[in-house]
Image (cartoon, rainbow, N blue to C red; front, side, top):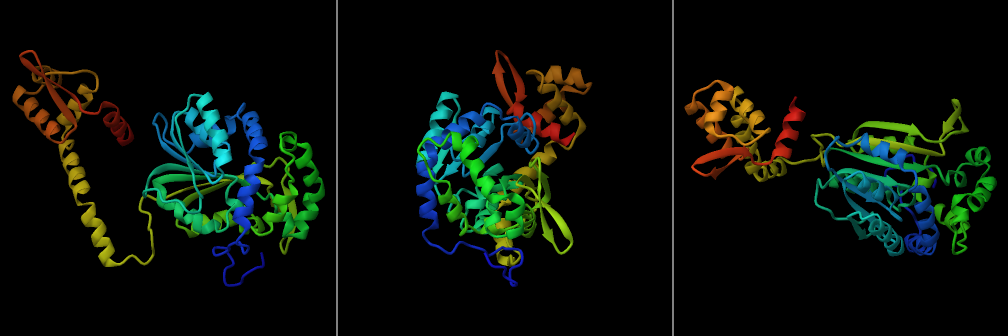
Length: 376
């Protein structure tokens, strides 16, 4: 990919050959049996992936995760084993079929979707975490895809990129020399992927396709960082997972270019979908949010009292009646009854008749306790 002085960050790069995506799909369908075997071997040890995922999600909560370009399901299966609600996307039906089979064997409930990761239409703010493992390098319009994914990410949610400079040697002579491209090509045939190549797929075919893939021409993960910051994400963190980073020459001397890496970033709570939001669109959004805001205000008023907060803490342990609440908090039965009515009207507390008396409990114990744990 030639350097574009009008786009130094590589935001508008795209592949030029309209057949590249079709050729990739054909390649990965042929490669699926062997790639599945590689995945099954890698699933014997998911500790690194598990650690990455757990570091980005709230502990003790079932989160919504989307694995973009899931292939045979390594990251999706790992996240599902951790107890999360997982959606997995890939445009290769053959890959998805293998992933489905493995998930069934593991008795995991994963939603698999055969679709192009660059042309998805999930509802906005659907996921707490988006995983992009070895997918960005093979996208035709990577920045456009990532920008689209950000719509699906909840405010405060994260993206986890696991990728590498797999084919940069085709674009930079210095990197190719340091990488010893020929020996790397040989290692593909002799390493894990080569040993699991069940259908004698020619790896050189993918090398040829990579020459038309934009992200392959970028020095990563520096490019990823600039893209994520440019799209408005924050708390961008990079880690090299290469035991022996390769060096290449720059005007400042030698610089390290990791063969593999991870990048994480967080979507801000107040994420701007566009820098050109009009007054009318803001007003429209506020109108749509009116009911939700009114409900939140009601909740804040309901818990804006020490005795009512103590009542919620008490009901987190067991059902109680008015008399029990009054004695426990040292308040009058009338005040205890009033507080319980306020909490019931707000939806935080529910009541039921037990014989001749009425007992109270939290309407959604786990959700309410989780909310208060985050407050304190």
